[in-house]
Length: 128
Image (tube, rainbow, N blue to C red; front, side, top):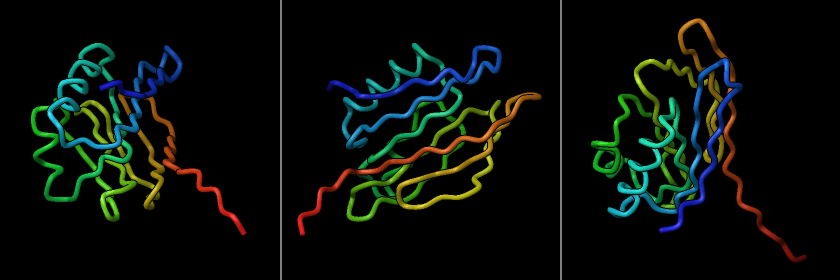
């Protein structure tokens, strides 16, 4: 598995680390192993898993043991798209707006806070 993910360290002084990962499927055991390694290495406060290809009932099975105490999930349509958001107990999240392909939230950690928008968009070329 060759994960394509991004790690954002929001200005060093904020000490906030965010990972977004377009994993294209979160059910397999390879995902869990790679995810745990990435989390151990980067210690993120927030993780957005894009295109997890799981339904609501499978979410708990997938996130069990991943080390995050909070989650928000926008269910995939036909097992495509979907956003799974995980965050740790020292970070507070307030979802401001969410759709099939985006999430806009306010985060707070200690006396620092900010806004964050994550978009998962697929480029589709149309021919007329």
